[in-house]
Every structure is written in structure tokens, then in C-alpha cells.
Image (cartoon, rainbow, N blue to C red; front, side, top):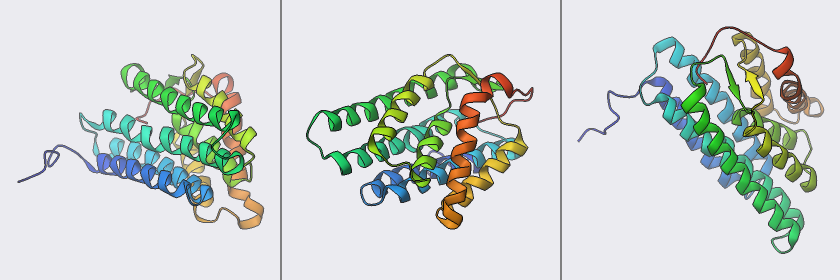
Length: 229
């Protein structure tokens, strides 16, 4: 018996499904090594960019937009939230107010990501911009921060809380130009493959780039062509 998706999904959808699988592996890895989990989140971000490229090159499917958002819930909502909670509870334990706050922020991060992705699928697909911080950017900020050495639980939890608010805000973010997306993907690949080389130069460069885009893109970075993301 053939699976239902045979003949209905394309190569971009296969990469999207792989993205979701990487997100699950990141959750499992976080229990043992949060830095490895952060690298896997960045690997999923590379896959997220690749599926958009493949969709434009070979064509998308009717299910593609929905699969993309579902996969992003795993990789850019659940996985980074679990990394945040793991870092916090490794330091603070599971008892007490601080650990409860950390778990609450993690839950809010997932909820905000789900809402943001649902709104994106309903209203922003095909546009050259989107409202609210993209989940990929939020996850990249947290993962790059961990790999750059920003692992203090207070800073990590506070950062996740701020990103919760920004994901559901009405701040408008333009899509990246292809050349800029490629450059970012190259730095992400360096952070995944050799995160500690040259005093963690790749994670630190990625973190600086992501913070700059977070703060400056709504006002200074605009484009006219759209993309699938």
C-alpha cells in the first residue's frame, strides 16, 4: 500500500519534514548537551532556508506552507524553549520560583511561536514581509547566544521572554535578499560545524548579525521581492 503523501509532496517538503525531525533530536540532545542542541537548532534553520530555495526552484505543493509551519513549531519553538529550560534547571534545579518562571517562559515561547506561525501562514505567506519576529530568527538568537557562551540562566530566560513578546508584536520585518540569506547560511554552517574555532568566531558573528537584524531591519532593511519561508 502506497503512503498517502506519495506523488503529492515534493523535494522541498522532504527537507521540511527533515527539519521537524532535527527539531526533535535537538530536544533530546538538550537533556545531555545544550550546546549540541543549539547546533541542531541552527542546522534546522539551514534546512528551513533550503526548503524555500528548493520550492522556488522546483515548485511547491499545496501542503508545503502548512508543513513548513508545523516543522517550525518543532525546530524553532519547542527545541529552543527546551534548551532555555534545560540551561535554567541545570543551574537552579526544578524546585523554587526561578525554575517555575523558566518553565513558564518556555511554555510561553512555544505558545507565541505557534500563534506567530499560524498568523504567518494565514496572512503573510507570499509577501515580502511579515509581522512579528520570525520564529527562525528568535531560535537563531537563542542558539547562537548559547554557542557564543551566553549561557547564564537569567540572561537566557529573560531573552526568551522578550522574544515571546516580539514574536506576537506588530513590528514588520522584511524578508532577506537571497545573497544575504546565503551569507547568513554560511555563518550558520560555520557555527554548526566548528562552533569553538577561533574563539567561537562563527557563533559570535551570527549572534551579532541576528541582533542587528532584530533591531535595525524593521526600519532600515527593505526589499521588493517575496519568497517562501
